[in-house]
Length: 324
Ligand code: MN
Ligand code: MN
Image (cartoon, rainbow, N blue to C red; front, side, top):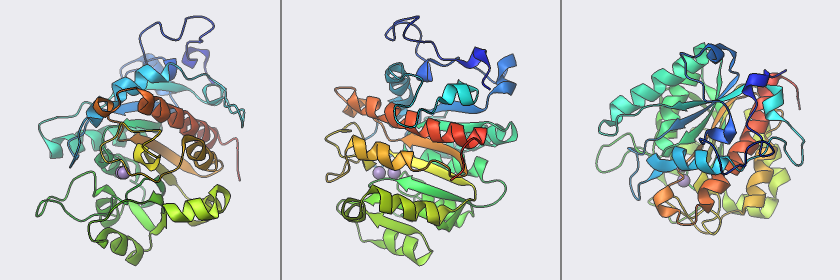
């Protein structure tokens, strides 16, 4: 089904350390290019960390994720999904933020994703800090509130920081619920842990119908049980997936601003994403990889490996080739 022009460069043809790095070695297609109108899934970088409240650096995420993504091959080892054969995938480049102006950056991102939705392109985004999910949802949820499966050590449901600041990477989903972008009854958060401020985020979420599953739920009940619950909560209606790299234990993914110990390993992270198969997915993001804190580069490798898992379930949803 996919156009041959959208095939990634194979490691059989050009060594994977060679060439100009694009996401997963896909063609780089700008909106002005003739191929743009044929794109089904766009891999997009949002190199912006203006919502970060603690250790910064996620603005450097997309570039390093692109570099490490050249290690990705074309076929999923378990499901045998071939995303690049199912649909036309391309690297659409980066959304240009304004690093000196938070509100302008949010508007630039929401304008970009509004256009992607108009052009019927499903986005797989590499962040950036987690505040970018808010303007992404502003673009994607134009037809009404959507559901969300959210993997994270944190709820990101706080109200405000520093005496009145409403827009940080700790607040995107509070704002998204208030703005009617997310249906809280169709939102499930998985992996929550770490020392707390006051618990007001969890109280707000549960009072509004968000299902908040702590790391103990995942570890004690196991992947199959947790993901069966998650699939039931979001149902068959449009659903977004947001994956904060700090969901994974910092032993495996230390390069992030707000690490929390006691998290799942990379194998478990792969298993949970695979169980998104068959959902009515409208897009996904992988956020909070901070290369300055990633001295080995392994966090970016973990990140792009999760992006490939996400791409496989998105490609099936876009192609309409799998129903649960
Ligand atoms: Mn987060
Ligand atoms: Mn987090």
